[in-house]
Image 1 (cartoon, rainbow, N blue to C red):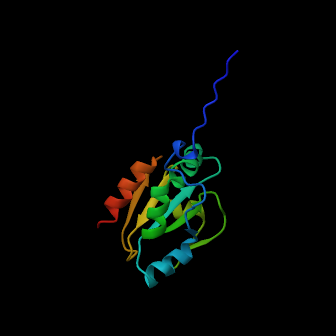
Image 2: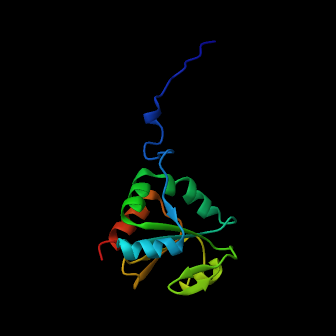
Length: 144
């Protein structure tokens, strides 16, 4: 019996994923303060332990080099647990994760919120997004 072993260098694996680099997640209160001190939009990812598509985005989209670089360089990224009872301060009011989601009109997960650097406007990004789709949407929103 003849066995053929092929060695593929690591760069032939999924080229867009960098396991060493990560998104710099902030809490919402810090992101609001940072956005005032050094204006950048805020990106909020609403997630939950029971959300399968959220987990998939966590394993793929949010580990993509382009997504990581974009979020770290151009945004203050925030992750909100939909089911958390912990109060989150947003624009002078306190919310639980569900209450904040309701404030933004979120009815399903995954959902992401883009908040302009002046914190006066927001846009909703609904559903699972590949890295390419998310980068395209964020770049489009960030032009306004």
